Length: 277
Ligand SMILES: Nc1ncnc2c1ncn2[C@@H]1O[C@H](COP(=O)(O)OP(=O)(O)O)[C@@H](O)[C@H]1O
Ligand SMILES: [Mg+2]
Image (cartoon, rainbow, N blue to C red; front, side, top):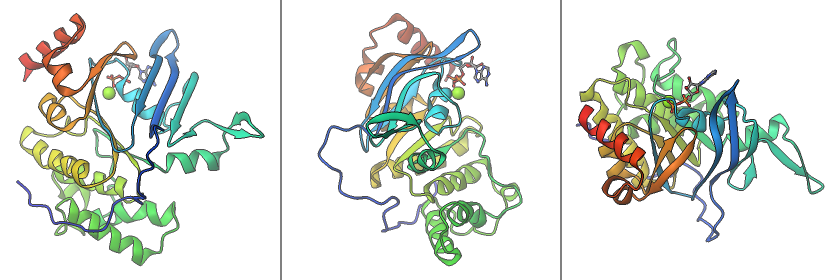
């Protein structure tokens, strides 16, 4: 098991959280179809600041689309998505909702980081450059500052000794940890994880999940995680949502959802997953 070095600096700008009920992420009546196939079906979801939500459910039920819509990688057909109180796709002008400018979308989207199943690193860049590049190019951060922070983040994910390694010289688990550091370099408030261990050999899953676990416990990050790792969801999440046909069929604490599922469909899914593992 990798021993992670500690970092004392906060990952995100961690202003004390206001004691308001405003969710960090909110989907309101969100619909999305591909032709006649409905992938998000009047979805409502609220995630509180610092809350850890695991999303489970059958393949094709819309889990990735939910995360991709939040990351503005997919458009939605109707409804509203808000991040930290700001609508993603609209802004208010003189009290009237108008289509958001690109600058507005960039600003709101800048609060979100995402890690994918396939690590998506730049193959021609070292681990260090992979983590430095977006802060320099997108945020206009000075290179020396971006470098210092990238080193800190790579140390935090246990890769302080691999700074100059290229993705092809790293294992899948190490590449995924670089991808996590790269997302964190943009100082997100919300982190999205889409089956981040699914492409890994089983013995490499643990090192990635350990990093996710540490992020969850040591930093004020809101986290949405699509996962097939029920054991991890059970131990890590504040809330588990069971996705079915583009909506949340059932949700609750891990104890409620795994221990006392209410719907037959949820029970079938959980027993099928248990049998497979
Ligand atoms: N770009 C696309 N065009 C057409 N269909 C798509 C597209 N992306 C996803 N889908 C379909 O939408 C459904 C839901 O996809 P997805 O959100 O990836 O589900 P999940 O992550 O739960 O497996 C799948 O059946 C998939 O085939
Ligand atoms: Mg998916």
